[in-house]
Length: 112
Image 1 (tube, rainbow, N blue to C red):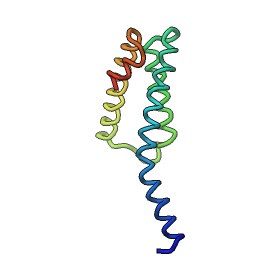
Image 2 (cartoon, helix red, strand yellow; image 1 turned 60 degrees about the horizontal axis):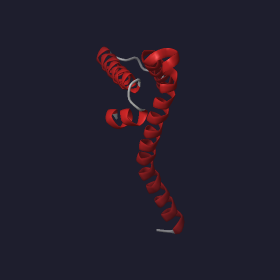
Image 3 (cartoon, one colour; image 1 turned 180 degrees about the horizontal axis):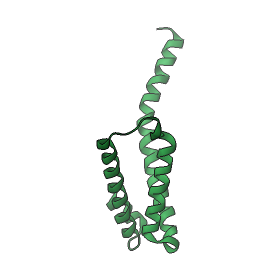
Image 4 (cartoon, one colour; image 1 turned 90 degrees about the horizontal axis):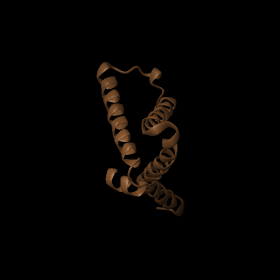
């Protein structure tokens, strides 16, 4: 294998290995920042309002990226997505309700 192809191979392997680690790191950072920002919103909108804002923002981001109007959903897929959204909303609500009474680090360690 010549040097150019060998270098390209190593770059490809690095990219394939870096993606999962980067995804996990991004997820951890997102959870921590989201929880910290939401806790600051509690005095203004409450835990329920913070969950509504977070889930609504996530839905808008997903709509922008996925654009479901380009490929219509069948009933089963739509119900699956709705169930998943309901589960995430419920999970966030219970987590944020816990944040009202326990420190952020404790709630994140127990709840995630």
